Image (tube, rainbow, N blue to C red; front, side, top):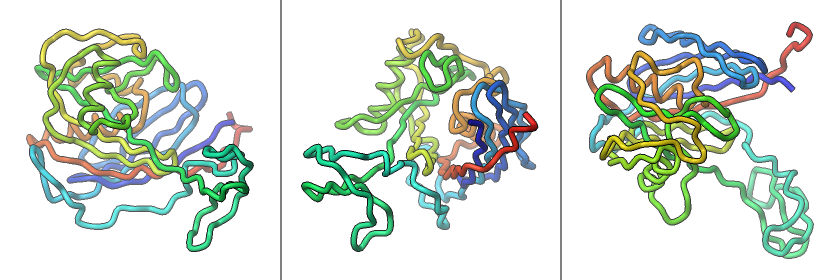
Length: 270
């Protein structure tokens, strides 16, 4: 079923308003901003609408440890559907769905051992790799967004730091060894339970090749970045923040929250 998604957010140093309308066959994106002039985007994703307003931060890269000047959180429904948890992950007993005493959210509670199943967000880590005025992108060989371009990124694993995970994902997806320079962006997406942490990085050598999860890896000149075929809105925002920083001559750390909500669509007009 087609659906529309609204995304709101904040980050450092500029204001972006982004509207993305998508169908099964195509989508269009336009940023409404005095400081950004972005081209349309088409993809095979479901229809969506989103906007992104960055939060102002007081520090800049490199070596910064920014603190937001104001709260940036917007209440959204949890990404997880707790009612899908039918059995206890510890003892296998059936669960009931109630709000525990002292809490505010519906939880899956085991009827045998009494343990509560908490659903926690996942962290996605990756690298924005610049080399001689170009950035390294990977064309995805897996779903979602098969055949679309992205920064090398993936889920952080237990036992590694965020930077280590970003370097591992870069090696797995692009066959590239990199040196992490500094964090560049953190983008929270509450509705789908993800937080993106993207690091600025540089290639240690020019050897890179697609891994099993990539169809192709390529260095793109900044004016050739395929904004019409990027895999995820988080990557779209990250790359545009990077280009905007370059125009201003100063790279900053960016923090933003992307809030999504489903809204009805009149499919009779499709």
